[in-house]
Image (cartoon, rainbow, N blue to C red; front, side):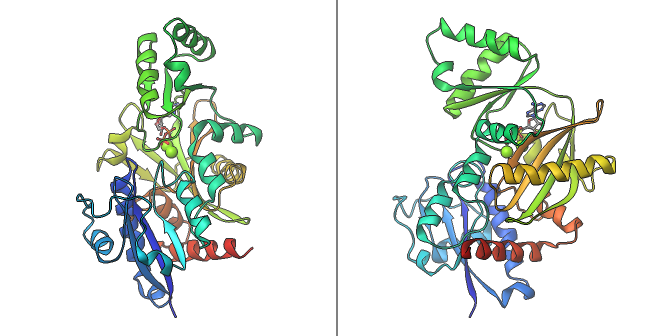
Length: 349
Ligand code: ADP
Ligand code: MG
Ligand code: MG
């Protein structure tokens, strides 16, 4: 009998459409001959309002790639009947309410294995402040930063200037203001002056209770894929190149605005250092199954700084994570098979 794989996609985050693309690529991989005799797909679509659709409706969205606009189900707790038939889940969700431990908590309570990190790894990986604290403990080099809360930013007008003074004395311009718990560069601003800093803090506070300000670096952006549970492997390192000011939302999702270079044209020693750091970062946040770890390579000094970990990175046919593994000798379909096997392995122990 075939293992029934629950593909969970869509979701309440800004990465809803990317999630659908990733899910379609994974569905195609499950339908190739080597996998089709082992696995059967059950589709579950989380609408933008957070309510789930299963069965035919979800299957249709997976096939067409067109998001469902009508709301057939208006209760986020009313899960489709087919949920009880799933043997293993793939929560193909990026960003808040998907990659951050919330769905992982629900699946843990269901007592069914799932692909990727558990509650802790997902939550720590998603929150840039918690993530940086974990990396710091692991001795991983990173940019200087300052953590703030919405309450501080929106505090009375006498406190706010002091907060900005503190940031200015700790970090130079340009610096990056970010909501702590988002992805795809949403809400991120590169600021070069006091007035830009003030505006960016106010804007970031509309997205998240937790905010981080980081010293800006001039660096190349390189990424490494990790696969495994307790025994992890690092892929070949890849680089992202683009012409915009930084790797913002538009650059990420407009075809032709960014290029992936695999392998990254960097010295072998630097690649090895990055692979080593990627494995350490994976362990530091308690990730499982998969993660993409992103770095800054400061060519001027030869320094490598860790930027972030993404516990469910983009997984479309052209995304960095599967491409890095393809170049490292694991084709897409085999990668999906391995991830499912890792989910089962982790659940057993
Ligand atoms: P996300 O999780 O949304 O991808 P990142 O922290 O990776 O957020 O930031 C998005 C992009 O912003 C990075 O890929 C990089 O181009 C730029 N960036 C972020 N932080 C810095 C920094 N400290 N110095 C230079 N560039 C940065
Ligand atoms: Mg991220
Ligand atoms: Mg990033």
